[in-house]
Amino acid sequence: MGGAAGPDLVAAVANAGGLGILPIWPDTPEAAKASIEHTQKRTTKAFAVNLRSDLEQTALIETAANAGVRLFNLFWGSPAKSMPAIEACDGRLIATIGDLASAKEAVDLGAAALIAQGVEAGGHVLGETLRDELLAQVVSESFGVPIIAAGGLATASDVSHVLSLGADAALFGTRFVVAQESIAHPEYKNAIISAPSGATVRTTCFDGFWPNAPHRVIRNSTFQVWDEAGQPSEGHRPGEGDPILTFPNGSSFPRYFVATPSIGMSGDIEASAMYAGEGLGEIQQVQPAAEIIAELVEGL
Ligand SMILES: Cc1cc2nc3c(=O)[nH]c(=O)nc-3n(C[C@H](O)[C@H](O)[C@H](O)COP(=O)(O)O)c2cc1C
Image 1 (cartoon, protein in one colour):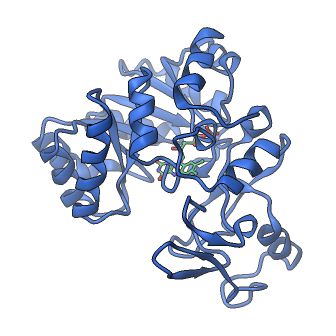
Image 2 (spheres, protein in one colour):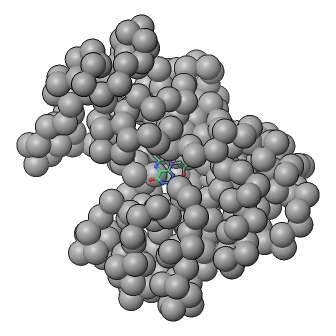
Image 3 (cartoon, protein in one colour):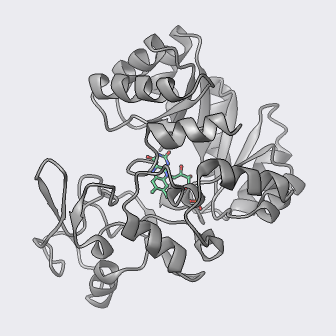
């Protein structure tokens, strides 16, 4: 989770027995190396890195491989162009898919596991299929690789539910945005904790830097004003030039920008892209990652 899962969260999840996933796709190779090494200083356990299928990411794959990473989670389209680099380092592909055709393609390419991401998921969501429907479709194919259910999960009973449908594992995003070790901005964490079920929307509203890419966010003031205006296109949107987020280095980004608010950013946090999944109504408090995992496991 770009903007939420930094080295501390990924290491805390790994140390507690989960598989942490470190997003490096927006990084330079130098920054990715530093982020991976930072994670490795905090855990000796394996973790995965997250990359985009639609971008040329070979240099990042090589950087991660040289640092000892072997698990590559790719999302957003066909992972075909990254497979040679993953195979060259004897890596394993964990492909995020949102429909059955993409699942088949990933398995044909040699995926070692699939993350079946339902439309309920927070963040960028390519597929439009409900999680349980997608899970049923993928499980019935008996691909012979682990199937990891994702989207709208928040509690131990959610884990039991997806396991009962044939999933081998469950993936949580939003629940860990509010982990103590997450780098999400405290106001964003509070927004998740205080939001009721039904507070999210899948939209293309926050498209600055990444256009035409549907994502699920909390319905906030930016979404509401844009929606009331009839969801106009770029150049015609209300408040388009308003500076909303200021990064620690002083650079400022306008309304509709893709970045989620992280620690160290300032500005109108409420008006920025606060990614969250449909399970947010069940998420009640900021907790250490290890406590979240213990709760999820003990409640099974
Ligand atoms: C803040 C945030 C950022 C995300 N960023 C990424 C990302 O960079 N790469 C990715 O593969 N998925 C990303 N996702 C999607 C998650 O990987 C996952 O599919 C989703 O969070 C699962 O749904 P849930 O949030 O309802 O648990 C993000 C999700 C959130 C909430």
